[in-house]
Image 1: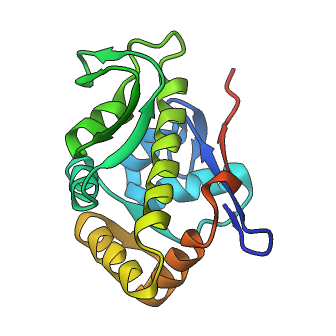
Image 2: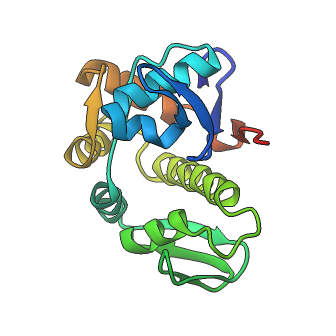
Amino acid sequence: GVNPALHQATILDIPRDTGMNIPGHGVDKVNASHSFGGPRLQADTISAVVGVPIPYVIDTDFDGFIGMVNDLGGLTVNVPIRMQDSFSGADFQPGVQKLNGNQALAYARNRHQFPNSDLTRTQNQGYLILQALTQFRAENTGPIPTLGLLADLSRHAKLDGIGLKDLYALGRLGLSIDPNQVKNVLVPVA
């Protein structure tokens, strides 16, 4: 969610196994909504739970994610601890490093080494979004570079409910927000 008046935003991290009522399918894991009806049903499911309409959906897959990160020339992150997970392919020493698309995907998927598994993974995914915003703001602040970012996005993702004009406005709004003014909030789970 974005509050343009306050120049603040919130990333709502919802773990994939969170139970929700999926319209037409009963209660199931939130990620099942994507399997049942794609990104629009998943957005509608989450919208019903949080009580806020979600008019725009941007959806990508692993290849799209890898492509976006590679198009950016990599993503700089600060790995907080030794990350090693044979399931995701994560194998990182602690410290600041630039990850290519495959490495960023491994970072984003890493969960088996953490005691709270999917909760840490979900927060790490929010962290990657914040790092991307930080990098976008440092490298691409003008209107023309924003169009370049949107071209990369459109090559690697599917858009639902949003046209190019609104996507450009949303991109400019996102770039106007200081990443330090974005909260990365994990939805409490039982």
